[in-house]
Amino acid sequence: MEIQYTSEPEYTVYIKYLSIMDYMNQTSPLQFILIGLSTNSYLQSVYFVIFLIMYIATVVGNVLIIIVVRVDSRLHTAMYFFLSNLSFIDLCFSSTIVPKLLVITLAKDKSISFLGCATQMYFHLALGGTECVILSIMAFDRYMAICNPLRYNTIMNKQICIQLAVGTWCAIFLNSISHAFFTFQLPYCRSNHVDHYFCEMPPLFRLSCKDTLMNEIAVYVSGGLVAICAFALTLMSYVQIISTVLKIRSTGGRHKAFSTCASHLAVVCLYYGAISFMYMRPRNSYSPKKDRVVSILYTVVTPMVNPIIYSIRNKEVKGSLKKMIISKMKS
Image (cartoon, rainbow, N blue to C red; front, side, top):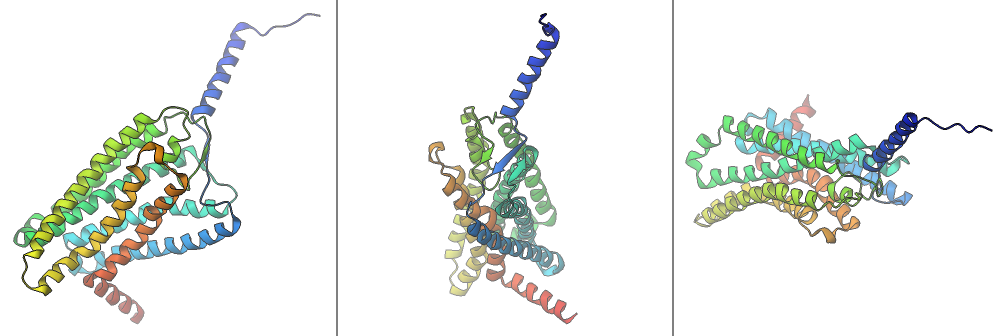
């Protein structure tokens, strides 16, 4: 009996092929599996209904804000220009996360493609960073309106507002590319099951078989600089605002000045509180359950609450909304 051996070149090519396929399976899974919020079928149904209602409220509320600012000429000011930017960010931010959350909550297939996961992370980072900076610009706008009213229209003119908005969007979206790119260059050989309801960096870091310390440092440095600078501008603006308002002698004047800032201040506290808890913790303190709860706060709750806060606390927005609704009902 004659034994036939595979030729050396063919054998070498075959071994190389298997090595490459094994490497690809370890480093680049074709898809990830999102664990979601619960495996209990009853809770899944409850979560689906709750998040569907919240998402509808988010879309309706933010779209109304954008339309009202666009239609009412009295709201064509810097304050409402940035408010419409904030509403657009919240609308996109929520749409990046919640539709997929609704799908994986009820569907048996909880998978998300490698590219889909990277895309979701990128827009989550970019939109979150843009909102952070836009909130600081809104604080600066209130500072100029209250502390420098005579120079307000000159400094916060239409051209400057557009430049600030465009510059913010471009800078943050470019900055987010590096985080998404380097995160998905990591070798994911431990598992492809993400213990979360969307693709976020901390849960993905835990799946990598490589030390992710450098990635986390990059997140802290880059994201921290943006967040700290934005928060510092916001804080300095409000220190000056409070100092100026306290000098106003009439109670009515102080109340009117503070009322123009109350909505924005509430949104800032809610946003920075959730972001700080999520990203500014030591690496050994991450908890999947806590992460999911906090993530729901700023991915689902905050985008829904922002238009409600502004419409309730702002007389101009409330008046324009009522006027628009009444005119639609009559027509």
